[in-house]
Image 1 (cartoon, rainbow, N blue to C red):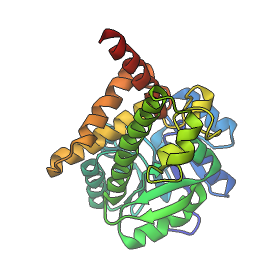
Image 2 (cartoon, rainbow, N blue to C red):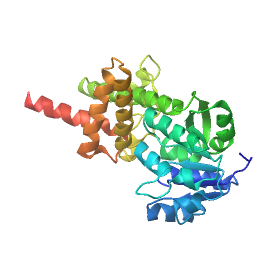
Image 3 (cartoon, helix red, strand yellow):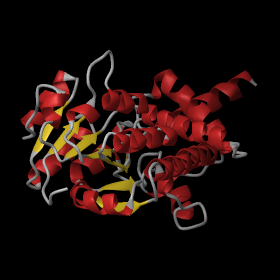
Image 4 (cartoon, one colour):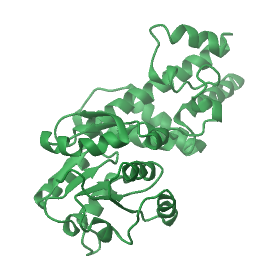
Length: 309
């Protein structure tokens, strides 16, 4: 792979669009594509050159970067559907396939197997940091793949993020992502329950924050993404829970964690429950709210349960 390869960037949504902009601003040649016209227009308005089709974007690219909603989207794009050639066919031999989607570990490994069998290279590199991190270029990348492939894509990832961690072989990045978000989902529920309990017991939000943030209850869900307004001015709770990291995305990631828990036989109890809680939250109006908005669901149901007692 050349030092400054042309990048086909497929998937220019809320995360992919800003990531592509950062690559362009760093001097990389980018050809963007998205099936959603509005996403294409927004990316183009921010300086990202766009292609008329995936095949046109991939033509001449040294790296094919995908940022898709699901593993099925990734696999379909790689293989092609309904008799149309996929990205693996459209790309020149030896192309680096860099998937930054968040998908099942097994799907990531299947995508890598397909890419390598077609004569290409493959790395999975899901991200953490949300839209704010994508815009600021401060994402964390969790990377799975061979060591030399990791080193080859590291310069690109360092343009879009501030922390790049090699997590092992193919699928390792996805494994690290779902384990991290399992911790995050469970801890946000615990922090939210504690604040609602504190309200019932007469504690102010600030008093509980001042104690827990400097004691054994300290965690990211409390000190960075605090689910109540006030103690952390930058948290989404101060913006009526505008995401941030949307409830629908947390529900999706916990479902991926649940799939992995079940396939590996881990005797987990909190993970499956957290997945159920966020599924309900997303289905009942929380899909587009920040995942810390789960506190409003806990508070509302607490009041309801008490009134019915």
